[in-house]
Amino acid sequence: MNTRPHGAPQLRNPTFADLRHSLLAGVRDFLAAPVPDLFFASFFVIAGLVMAAITYVTGTTFWLILAVMGFPLLGALAALGFYEVSRRRAAQEPLGLSQVASVVWFHRGEQLPWLAAIIIVAFLFWFFLGHMIFALFLGLSPMTNVSTSLDIFLTREGLMMLGFGTLVGAGFALFVFSISVMGMPMLLDRDVDFISALLRSIAAVRAAPFAYLCWGAVVAVLTLLAMVPMFLGLFVVMPVLGHATWHLYRNLSETG
Image 1 (cartoon, rainbow, N blue to C red):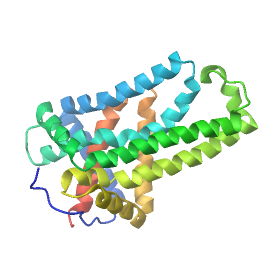
Image 2 (image 1 turned 90 degrees about the horizontal axis):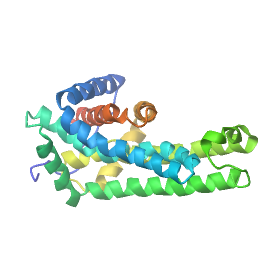
Image 3 (image 1 turned 90 degrees about the vertical axis):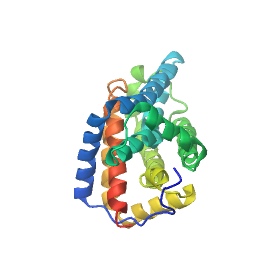
Image 4 (image 1 turned 180 degrees about the vertical axis):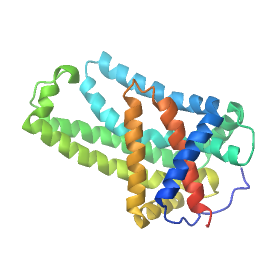
């Protein structure tokens, strides 16, 4: 663990060929190591099911909309195990679950938990603001369950709430994406503090916003689609995207 290169690398701007290559490499890595991938993906499938169950039992399933919109913010937290699988596969090291999990466990005392904490705080803050947005636009409207209150979203207040909430949610998603897309794999690959990693990641996104936003859109759409069948699609989508992000980072940092 101490042989990692020191400091944040220089990152070249991505091309669409890089994005395509990274996705294909992500699929290959998933097929090569399904056991550790399914293990780490299971945490997010379980989290999604628990989240849905809580809102259903408490009769507040309309809050599930906030959770679903914010769920991709937490996607980066599951990625460390996927990054390690890709790294070990490239280095021709064993891909057993115990070897991968030991590296993830090692990083609990490193810099990565600090970046993860920022992501969690952003998710919780989004949930808090989402409640405020609901109250601001629909606080006086009768609504107990989203399955029986869909018409409320088609009212003037409902449409305004959806529009404003989408903009706010997009801002949170952009922030988390900017600090994590290169910052998370960098913390596994390099001996670097989390501040330097997130700043270098933000700088990379600012230098090539269109390419990174296209990548972010692919990640968001695939993640949301994977959540539709009771979150079960995350078993495949999360590992593929995690591996793909690692390959994108490595491709862009090769010249650094």
